[in-house]
Length: 343
Ligand code: CP3
Image (cartoon, rainbow, N blue to C red; front, side, top):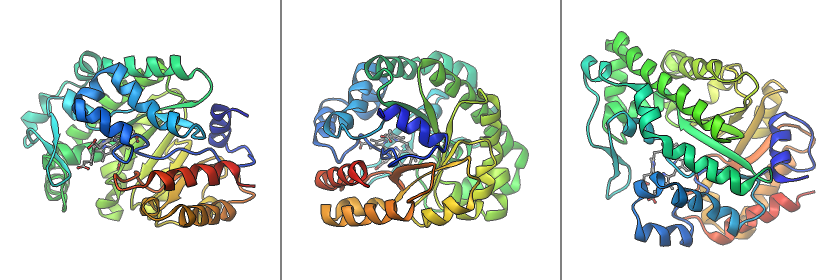
């Protein structure tokens, strides 16, 4: 069975001898070949240049041919950027946006249709290059941020510890909050439609900061908008939802129209599998810190997770969040070897 068939079967919750494997931030600073390219071009330049973005996307697959999916090399922040807020990385880590969304007038001025169609054609070009290269052998994953997660960067002006401004907006001026989320939802619908046309086999929505809003407000702040995006896309197209720190909401997420839920490492994946509807796949969920230990520890923990899922259908193996820059190549190799040879 080839990688793409394995992946699509897992998404369809069909029984398999072993789960397909990929990791979030699959291309990234833990790979010397990525660091070598980045020494010559900026991150944004690599993202915006289809030949370079495609090359970076494929780097992990060249090094680890056992991986079953390629994820587009890009960033969730290309949407705010196309809407007029460029981003940069802070020296000490984290994101700095060039400006902040502060007023209703700032939001009314955003033009989602023009932003995506005029400014993000390079994403479509990159996906087409990748589809041509991969054909039907590997799964090609597109992605984007959730409206809530993107709104946090746009209103906070970058990474934040407390998410104070976006929460204040949510609690004090719901109409303005909704206006922003609606613009982002519109942008993401067109953006994902573009990715589907360009050849993506599935799309992952990153609601990375969904766990930061108060539990009873998760629906109004985040899940409602995700549901709206999924409803606007072709009914049979698979969407994977990743959200960190949202364990109390897994069931609601499973009924949002997604094909798979990607869960963070704090969950016991076997319990999640037993709890969620059998037609929704689960993805995850090793703690990314394990990739900084030793190959023996990675093999032990990956086997423990695989064994805990034995006999279940609908599992895509992944980490519970993105691989870190400190991850060791030997550990990634041990993960690929363990998952692909597991019996
Ligand atoms: O998974 C993949 O391999 C696809 C590429 C991808 C990147 N970012 C590349 C990247 C994906 C899917 C993302 C998503 C993303 N970007 C998210 C959601 C996923 C998550 O991890 O929760 C978020 C919150 C962002 C915003 C962002 N971009 C952050 C917080 C950072 C790290 C900044 C820092 O100081 O470490 C980035 C940078 C980034 N995006 C890198 C990569 C490979 C590292 C860039 C570098 O230094 O070379």
